[in-house]
Amino acid sequence: MSMVRKLHPHIAKDLREFLSENNISTKKLVIDLEAETIEDFDDYSVDDILSVAGILKPGEAQELLDHIHESREGWGK
Image 1 (spheres, rainbow, N blue to C red):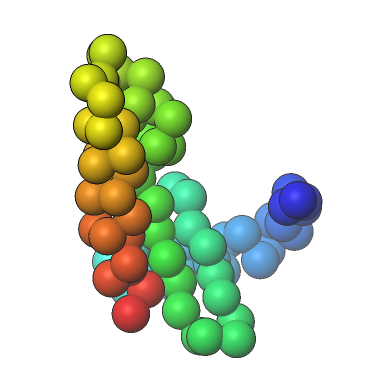
Image 2 (cartoon, rainbow, N blue to C red; image 1 turned 180 degrees about the vertical axis):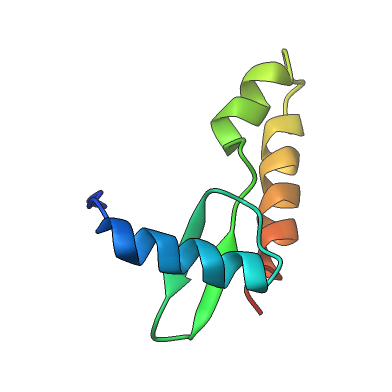
């Protein structure tokens, strides 16, 4: 389970400047200090995508999830 913690305003300002300098404009990020990577996410979650996909035929849901997973494997590398 993840925890949300409030950033100190000075740290938030420094992070915004860093992200701007590195042409990162997304608002949702995962910072992995061990791997030394920053992973950005689209504003839409998998649940959002599936909710607008409508009724899927058998197998299509898994195919869509597999495609999403494969497309995200390259993020942060």
